[in-house]
Image (cartoon, rainbow, N blue to C red):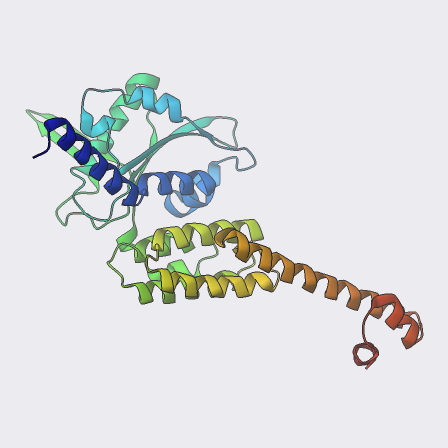
Length: 319
């Protein structure tokens, strides 16, 4: 029989192991919001998006918000399932607004009373700033059927109704998300997919479709890279064989010179992909030199010497 101290250590170790295995929804959503803040606002609060001065960066008031939320209530002060952000958004008229973002970052509906929590946060922010925040609640899981999407209270003639913006993933339309020109909708689509308990092969098929979809879009390589990173993270393939199969698809695209996939590969895979991409880049450069020389009437043999290309390939360019 172990001592109480040993039992405590064992419990702590097991708790630590569980903590390591648990997906960090809180961290995921905070990073996503910070990376694509204005695009998220475009989806969830279009009126604010139109008035925001998007040439300026929003200011995330992380430390200030933690100070505002100092409370003895452990459910509010410490909970791994909530991602709460207070953001100062510059407006085109020179004004600014504080935006409260509360992400119900969990896959079940056991998060308690969301409207009450939204009102509690609103009260704390107002008490601190004497300013009502623009509020957005993002529910990443299925909410209880009887839960209202606003806060209400009526007691002896005193009545309070507090309505805020809601973005409930389970209620978003798949076709709208897939056809959208807003990059954030790709990740919202993936997060909605991740709500259910999906088997590993279905996850693989979903991510392969996402890769093909991103390839078709005209967004920046940096945006597509981060969108793919967030999508792959939230879908979370756990089967090593299927994950390896998925990486082979990424590796093939990376070899074709598409740098957006590099960040999801191992060090060795990245080196191989970069080498192939470099070789393809050199090949393109040689072909460009050959075309320019042909246009200026340079003989084929001289072009072959200058570009390092075989004569047959240069003749094909000439034709």
